[in-house]
Length: 440
Image (tube, rainbow, N blue to C red; front, side):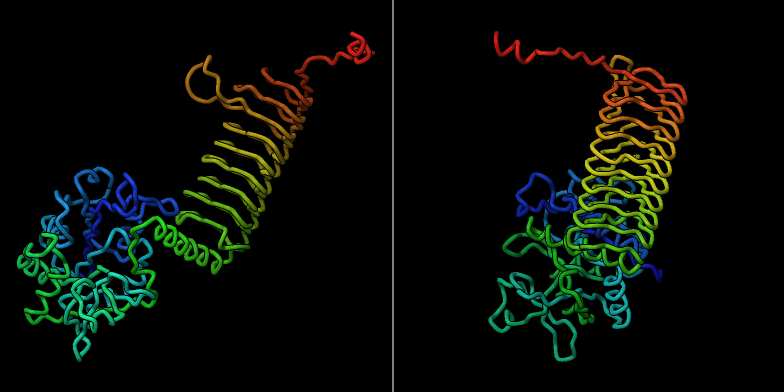
């Protein structure tokens, strides 16, 4: 038997309780869709093959992932059956995962699989004990601890409702046992659907051993069905990511107000201040200080660089060693050289700023020139340049090394190295003007 497990992620439901036109599994948490968190957990335990079961409408939404289509929403048993041909020949253990359980961790899946193999079970249920069992199916065990049944809340007796161990709808099956059990299912129930819980019942009735592993943290096993539960899952994932960074040597001043997406890389001794959001594949080097109130989106922040407060670094931004992007600054697709500063109230887009250059307050690179053609145009600012307040650089334009630009200038022509550029109207002062207006 293959030592690697296979996995099926069930993601075909519509999730009407989300009150959304978007399928439940495609709602986003920290830069990923809900189902993507589950897929990544399965990948982390080396599940192969890995199949996502989706509705016909969602089949085109999974690039690079094998999918199986459940043509009609006929229950979880039917959803797993839809993946049968994709798993032809698989003789390993088979995870069946819910695409609406984004907090599930690879560590929990590994523990579930270890329990399944140690027990020699035909199926192992991931169960949990939530503070409120609500409408979850109760896990009923026999005197030896084996699972005897999963009883839905609506069908449970008062004694069964008192059981606090419930079914997460996440399982490991022995592949050679699950398909015969599915073949025995029928739709003779109120909903007219095929359920995996009935497959578990079939295994028990056939004399197979069914085990259950209780999740140490019940929240990992919870599914998401409402916007409130989506927010709670996001907070749990935020806390997990932040803890990993802090244990690796990153200072996060206020973890509850700091949101870092999972593919972000942060080196030890970086410092993240409150109300900061770091997205995409951003990289933050050692000694950098980010925030408070900063948004970093697919940007790179070099060693010892500073960002914020109230700063927005958009995709393609690269701050080199010791660079500064200050208060109310937005930078996009631009390289800010080592020791260069964009201290405040500026938009720098599609630009290269040289080392030790200082950009005065209120600077704008005017990168959109439709009269010149499609796309954005670049501004090149050299080393050790000193610009004044309220400069506009109309791209494409180049400012040479060691140049100066006077305050209030709109620069439309290249400035040679070491030159002073003044591009503004001459001041005209009319003495006595106020008195004349008063007597008119």
